[in-house]
Length: 92
Image (cartoon, rainbow, N blue to C red):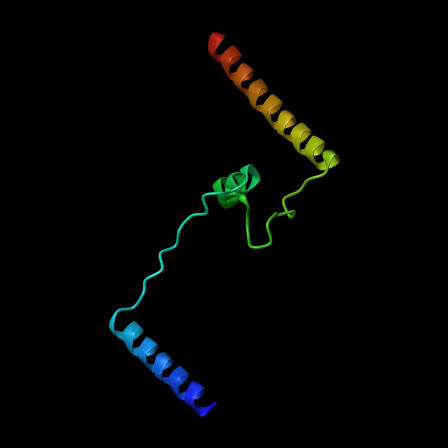
């Protein structure tokens, strides 16, 4: 048993010295065999916000969207009315 342990220690010592002199560099390679879903996720992963994945704080209900649309429409109508008034004044 002692003989096996000493041989193992010698192999490990030689291995460590060899790696110190000429280290083995492992290059990061792409997986060539990705499914279509994995390829799509890899291409669009930058579109997902934050670490958790999706962001729900910016979610608006249908009611909130309609109210926002109506406010925008009202302000646009007011702006168009002002422009028409200015055009009428210029004509007169």
